[in-house]
Length: 341
Length: 241
Image 1 (tube, one colour):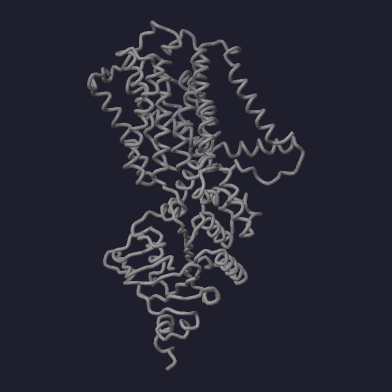
Image 2 (cartoon, chains in turn purple, blue):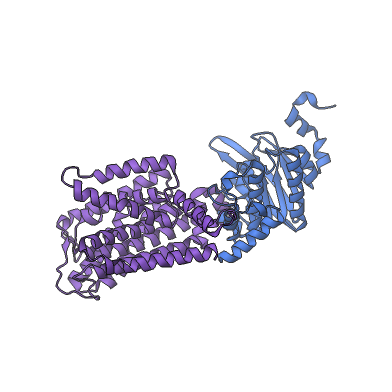
């Protein structure tokens, strides 16, 4: 047995377990929580294409969730278009908006970029909150859109039980993980990492840093918008504060930073660790201490940044690799390449 | 044929003229050295050639084409690579990863880029460090990494900006040998260097600049005995008359 076969079988086992969960766990409440966990893992993995690989800190990604959610919902409510189709339309729309936001902001560095993306994200939310109609489209301002749960079924992306939602978001999550894995090992992934770390050196080595970042931004906003449609169909009610809030953008960034931005496992790990915290603090302290989860996140983030600036995935991966070494009973043969990527 | 030709290059930063009507040319397969006191404008001239700055006045021709204001990444794809005086490695990544970023300049496939990068590391006898994180390397190794990355882009012309600064004498000799080997492989080389022993041993010709202007040009021997050069470096009273 080699390291590779163990890794692959562990991943397959994880997949099987993930697909088996609804067979064992029948409680809709818990399934709902897990669906949201996957939703956040998905969002963060999409965010990671820009925020992780390209080394910038976008804090306006909820705008893309909102664009995805609103596009598919408006199209299905007003024109009877299947949300699946609306999902793709929303994705492309978000991709275009992503490029438009990226064009001026990628010239900025560090905190300025983060601030500019917050401004764009908040701008879009305020706009949606203050207008009733956008041309022929009815978006109903702050009241938001309700999707009447009349026509359930796959084509309408609407179900009476949680299981179908669970499988949809699981497949989406696996898809986006596979996609980012593929990107991280492609030319674009190398260029993004290089451009994020030392832009000048990267440029002199043939990397058009600005273009690489824009491509990543387009992909990231496209993928993020797909999750917006999922969220709209999952909750059947969207309003600007629910799908475009700054809190959502921050939570994505929190998960990525604590889990480990720039790595494939980081966002998943971050969501696994942080989502339960926020769910349980909302269930048990929601009335007495609202927002407790954000305080916990902040504290955890400070500790992680001090002791593990690369996020929690690094020490956990080290433990995992050591465990593997012990199982294989051989001397560690150098460090595996994926530790740095 | 001249692979690089610079005609009356001027670069101003506000009121400061960093490079002043500089003209020079490099023949294919040549090693040209550039020396000059600190602040003479050597690195600025380099940055103009490499596309980091666009010249205020004057023209730069690379392989017969005018390259004023051409972006660095396009120059790199055209066969012009450079190293940085202050090394700029991708610190969190492995040595192999660093070199692979560069070898993607010639291919789109990850496997091909890896193969190319390994080949470059082998020619620089640097293969044993391929999995080391670049942030953990010594300064000598970082300089070598700079060379490896520049080399992996398959350049016709290599600009070396003080690749030997901070090295021990034995390491300098190694680097001189590496650069000579590169020339033997057909790469034209333009070096800025402060270590006289190295630049004298390396260069076919040397250009000396002072306050942005060219004050001497010739073989290492000619330059070393040139009055203007001694004045610029040591002061008037050292000129033997």
